[in-house]
Length: 266
Ligand SMILES: NC(=O)C1=CN([C@@H]2O[C@H](COP(=O)(O)OP(=O)(O)OC[C@H]3O[C@@H](n4cnc5c(N)ncnc54)[C@H](O)[C@@H]3O)[C@@H](O)[C@H]2O)C=CC1
Ligand SMILES: O=C(O)[C@H]1OC(=O)[C@H](O)[C@@H](O)[C@@H]1O
Image (cartoon, rainbow, N blue to C red; front, top):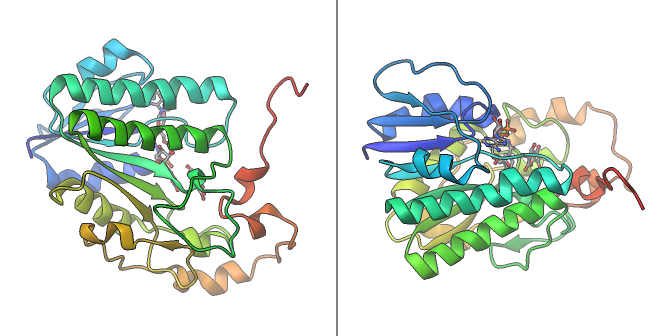
């Protein structure tokens, strides 16, 4: 493709994908509200943008063929913050995609759309969503937005419910949810180039031993994870045990299920 837009490019995953998505487009347009390293060469463009600013997002999408949408608040925060970056932000992205004729979005959704399922439960993409906070709710809204813009306007999306994508799993829960950077990159490649994805929901996890999520509804993507959290097991299990009453040991969303209330607790 000619020009691929990466939002959230200054973030943890954005920095990784800035390097790894280079082979997939002639030009990678990088955007964030936070400062970004200048364009390294003619194959990069840096366009600062606040996702909650409709006019700025419309300008941002001009000339883009596809979007990898990572930008937004990535943890649980007061609703008003989530509203601006994630809820207004995703609306602005899809509406600009419609106006500019962009036909493919890869949306960084999250396991926190289903965070209130227990770790003893196994679910697929069709399970009723159980968001574990305002953050999870915003990602759930983003998935609905993706479905609507497909049904109404034919814009295709792969919503990747990312588990935990970091260099290595930080705790026992992440032994199940971990997604290596290599597998994340491969999943984004499949999400960008597989024809006829409509709105596909896929769980972003590596080939871990004990998983809670079934990706059979996304088999058409042909995603085959290469890595496994197993290589980190000894290191993670050397950590102090987690109490059985700890949300990290009970819920798929772990500690996110126990955040808040924020500010005025009345
Ligand atoms: N890293 C992980 O394990 C997971 C990540 N995700 C999602 O993947 C995406 C990337 O995650 P990370 O890189 O870990 O998060 P991050 O917090 O490091 O990066 C998010 C980026 O979005 C930018 N941003 C925030 N508000 C913005 C606004 N109003 N306008 C423009 N940019 C704004 C931030 O400046 C930041 O650079 C996020 O959407 C996150 O929700 C989902 C599940 C797990
Ligand atoms: O559940 C998890 O481990 C991850 O999920 C997310 O959606 C967050 O963006 C990330 O900060 C968490 O670490």
